[in-house]
Image (tube, rainbow, N blue to C red; front, side, top):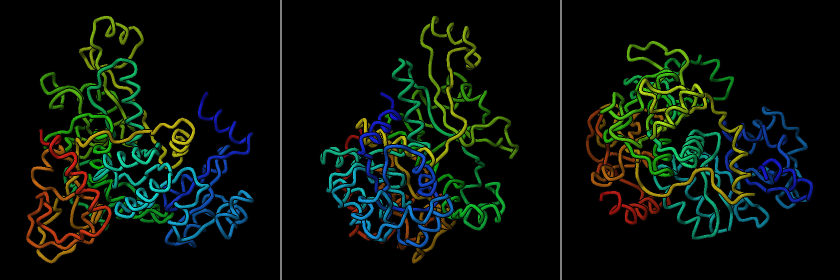
Length: 450
């Protein structure tokens, strides 16, 4: 039975999937826009640091005031409306909630939310992929130990890439490479919230109209988010990681199967079976026609002459050899698609992407020369960007994960372009996020360094 049919059945039976949302910012608002249009789900509560901001976003996406009138979670359950408050713990601990959608974008807070949800028997759809990037393998293990499901969020590119990889492998195709698109030139890694809109291609007015956060969007532009999302994909699928970070080969959709081949065959891959990100800009800054900037893709290999003949007979676009074929989605709809994960987790008991091992890591890397005493400002800020590295390299160097490089003081100088180590900073070791990361390192490092 399709997910939609299952949702319709739950609606007909008066047993909707009961959801708690933590964080009602841009991504959360996109999901909120779809909830009234989806059968068989009930958003029981929203927890947000700014309830008034959450209400404003509800109005922005078309909710009527009566839909979020419930004074308590229990009242929301009785009349089918939604409660809005600041108390995320009350939301996570309420026995009627089935699925928590973690949507804060704060990796340290997200770990707290996930762990508490697991402890209270709740499935988690984790939109905050930054947390998954630095401790997702252990979060997945802790969820399984608690008998619940932990999942990446459909609509975000990692889950969509995992879906394409699963399609390929289920069909019997070896996966050569998989990833997403991005607008990239090498100097973008130095971008700050002050320069982001010009590079990104939006005016400040467009950004303000959309309620867009310059620091968050700069994390896309400066390479941090592509590295974070590639880490999530690698850890979920087992695909390898380039030894010195993403290459960002420029390519049109037509050329993806050409560049995502091994170096020995004219492509950019160190070996078969890698994650990579395709740039929508040539090295000189020229925009590539028919790009994959907002999309996802997977390149597969036709191992036999018969399969390659089938590619040709059905006009599948391949590389010149006819051996490599790329399937793609040119767009992703972000929070508008999260309902797929919620339904899959709640009704099929299946995640839409989940870490199965520690293959990749995102290490904080200096945007400029940094001096002792400076505070790192994390993803998308003025001080560091995230570089994708194999987990064994990060483990060997003691790499500082980008997700924990926020509001942390440097204790020694770091040169521009240098990746930071734990020993470069005075880390707050009291957080669950730090302890989970260190627990994961202890559990997976021997395998990662093998």
